[in-house]
Image 1 (cartoon, one colour):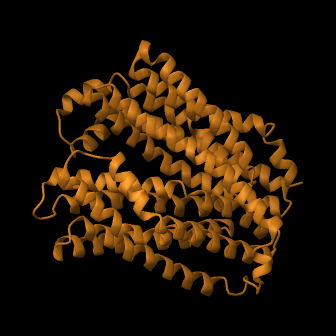
Image 2 (image 1 turned 90 degrees about the vertical axis):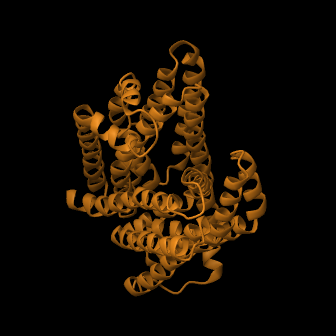
Image 3 (image 1 turned 90 degrees about the horizontal axis):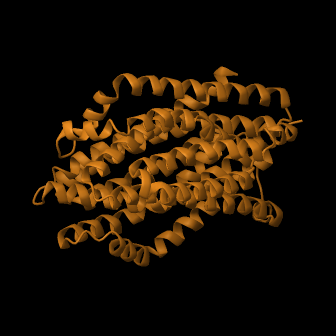
Amino acid sequence: MNKAIFRLAIPNIISNITVPLMGIVSTAIAGRIGNSDDAIAIGALSIGVTIFNFIYWNCSFIRMGTSGLTAQAFGADDNRGVTLMLWRAILVSLAVGIVAFALQYPIGEFSLWFMDTGSAESRQMIADYFYTRIWAVPAGILLFGFNGWLTGVQNAVIPMIVAIIVNCTHIVCSYLFAIEADMGLSGIALGSVVAQWSGVAIMVIIILTRYARRLVKVSFKEIMDLGSMRRFFSINADIIVRTFCLVAVYTFFTKASADTGDSNILAVNTILLQLFTLFSYMNDGLAYAAEALTGRFIGARDGSSLRHCLRLCMVWGVAVSLLFVSVYVGWWRDIFSFIATSGDGDISTLLSVAEQYIGWIIIIPIASAMPFIMDGIMVGATRSRIMRNSMIYSSICFFLILYGLGPFIGNNALWLAFTSFMAIRGILQYIMSHNLNDIYREAE
């Protein structure tokens, strides 16, 4: 069982790690664009990336909705169901991608207005980046669908390979277009377009080659079956609400940091949140394994394996949390200084401010061990309503704590709210599933 868990978890962890690495390289390229101020270029890139992160993050429901249903069909050895889920993932991904592309002008202009930097040069660079990279959005959303389907059929290696190829292609093309061809930020955006569509082409070839025997011929009427599509969209609607709440919490975390009016607190909160993100990449890999195996064992009606699997996933989730706690306790100053040296400001001042709040980043991995694993379990069991409701309630708690205690304990209220938000999510999902007994019954 441990082999089954880590066969899925490790490739996903590697795939996750490529994301920040690509961001670091893209930032370095932006800082070397000729005929522009480094700070303006890097800031414009950051805003442009944020806009697309918002688009992609809100489309993550396609991956999560596809994964659980596919895993259950796979566990039941239902090749027709597996094939139908692939086609549904493709059709929904294409539809969402085309709609996003068609609405590029209102999305782009609103984003430019909302993220206005007050600099005409910066605004133009962001616009150039947005209206070039928007051509990659349908491909990026298609990759969500493919990755969700592959997770469902217990394959994390193909998404890892494609992620590495896509990110390497993005880096090479971004350098060639932005620096060698002197296209500026548009070159980095064009690199993303080439990389994303290359990833789609590679993914199609691999899936057709690797799964030709499992895929069966199905009709369009079967794909669009009303009952199946209703269930698919019902799950996705719950996940959309859940994702919106998550985005709102992270957005207000940054806003509350900026509202302090203290640039040191904003910088410290940003870096500490990056430390939390490093932890989340590890536990996300375990969450992907939990969702794939949960769906598989439910589909196979294998209750004993499901219990064994979930116990081990939780144990490993806690182990990863304790590992990060020990790392942060022993080396947080070194890690913090390494990240902070890439920005401006006095490191010693930032360190002295960070000392006031570092306890939170040590507590958070423990508070967050359960939510990641529970998310994976609920996705695999297609219990999207539990995910939605627990996220709504924990988000309400976040805002109550933030604005209720903020006037009294300042920035500590923000970290208390965020830590509570993470912990309450996991606790509520456990309680709402009746200590996971509802999930176990599905496999029996």
